[in-house]
Each structure stands twice: as C-alpha cells, then as structure tokens.
Image (tube, rainbow, N blue to C red):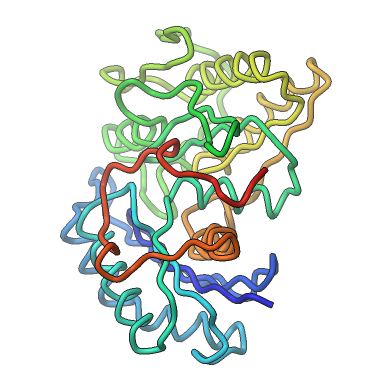
Length: 313
C-alpha cells in the first residue's frame, strides 16, 4: 500500500488530504473569505494559510487515523496559482518532508483536479473541461501529455463570475459562483449577451454583465468540438466552477445528443482540496517520480501540458 499526503493552497483555499491506494482517508479544508465587493489579495491569503495550516494538518492525520511514520510521500502544489499562498504551503510541505524523512513531490494543480476527477468518477479517457477561478481549458490525453485543445485567451470563467459578483456586491460566502448560481435559478428571462468563441478558444474579459447561460454555452461548444476532434465519448468537468449544476445540466444535454457520458464531482472534490494533490502525487510517486529538495520551488505559471504523464499508457 502507498500512502500520500497532499498540501494544496494555490488560491483562497488551504487543504490537506491523504490518499491510500485510491481511497480518500481525509480531506479537511479552510477558505479565506473576504467581504462582499472585495477579492482576495495574495499577502492576506498567505497570512490566512499560515494561521490555519498546522491545524488542518493535524485534522488530516487524525481523521485518517495515521501517524507521520505511515506516510510514504509528501506532495504539494507547485503551481499554477498565487505566489504568496503557494510559497507558504510549499515551505510547510518541505519542512514536513524533512522532519518526517519522506520524499517530496511537486504537483501541477490542474493535473491534481484531473486525476481526482478520474478517481472519483471512474471516467476512462474523457475530454476534460477544467473551469475554475484561475483556469479555463479543454483538455484531452495523448502521448504522455494532457493536451490543451482550447482555453481562455484572457481571464478564466471563474474570475469572470467573481468580478461580476464584486460589481453587484454579491456575498463571497461560501463563494461568489455558488451565490450567482442560486440567484440564476430564480431567473426566467434570457438576456442576449456577447458570445465570443474564437476557434477553440474563448474570451471573457471586459464584459462584466456576462451571466451563466451565455458563458456556459461557450464552454459547452468548445468542449463538443474537442470531443469531435478526439473521437471521445466521455466528458469530465473539473475545477471549482465544475460544481455548478446548470453547467452540468447544459453539458449533459450535449452529451446525450452525442450519445456520450458526462462525469462530474460535487464540491468535496471539484473545489480545490488537498486530496487531489495527494492523488496526483500518488500516481506520480508510483511511477517513480520525486522532487529533490533543491528543485522544490513553486511557479505561478505552470501549464497543464508541460507535465510528462508517466503514469498513463
């Protein structure tokens, strides 16, 4: 058996999860929440993470019923993400690895989402829609890489929704996107808005009056194009925005029309969490990868397709 602990803190959530051979043993998490109309600054977010990370680590071990000696590898988010929070979590992961005498492993945040989604849903080889506050990508696996078929050319879909929420002072608790989703359920009139799909890419910037229906239609369109290109019959939605039930519903209609299957997870695993880093780390560690201490830096820009996927055929 292989047990991996994962540290995630690339944005406003700090999570530590433990995976043992595909079983989630624990996955506690904390969220830095700011007042309505405000975003979260890197320095303030890092301060929040520093204040709670040891408590979350203790919870993760206690919920899993494990001791440091039971851990085989320490995984952490190398990037992409916000610099200060990433550094905070990486420092703790490095320290823990040295104190416990365990190998260290830097994980790509985006691949953490994909591997967690594959584990939970049992999707085989899906076309992946990765949608979050910092990323918007349509991805498919080919020849030891997660290839990006389409992406945003400016801001991410989650960032677009967050900005809209700040303009009209929607609460950040539990998240702007969740509160927009609840308000949208009460709507009855569709207002036609700019729809900007450029080939396989999308553009969200500059138009803060975008709402769910238009934004999600754009994402469904480019996902369907990627499916057609790859001959795929599966779609997996990952990332924090992937919790949105309207997005899942719209993607489900497209999949049904194509005779395809849709896979998605709930907020336990869609939203940033430590278990997803542990799961990707588990896959990487089992394929022989480790990160030497001198190479255990972080990077705010770390594309999904930069990582060699050594654990898949």
